[in-house]
Length: 195
Image (cartoon, rainbow, N blue to C red; front, side, top):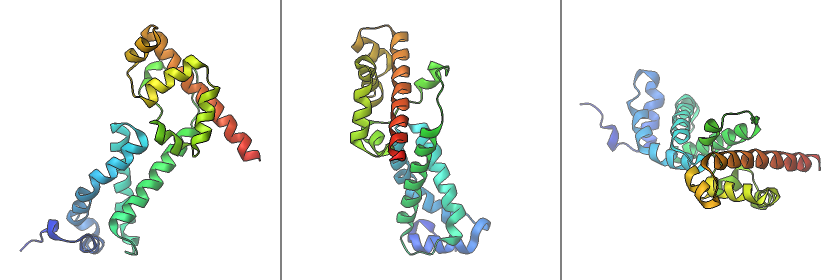
């Protein structure tokens, strides 16, 4: 009689997955299905868009699959996967913040890579006060465009309407605001690192 994996506990599934390895992925697949939504929601909170959340979810479960032979069970599988999720999201956000953005980048490309929602922006950059400080250093029109687009989630046409400007001008203003934010933030980080 075949095993009913859906009736097994997480620790039983982990044991089965560790014993059978690549020969039989059904135990790990059950763990994946149990926690896929949980991990996806955590990733979505970190990145603010579905595609990045889906990609990161796949990467996290790949890391979990590769790391399963070394999983000693000192914590629950859920806790272990959550730790992998937090570390992976944090590392990806850090990696992205270090990637240089050139002014020549296509506006349409920038359009799909908005800053994260305000609470995640604070997490990404550590200190809410520092984020607020950087925002205050932007030109008023750019700060408003950035807040409307990246923190309130408005579309470019809505930003244009709010600011009473053309759509192309709204895209350009948001792009300039993002670049200015990044530049000011990185400069403030460099000053902190020197202290």
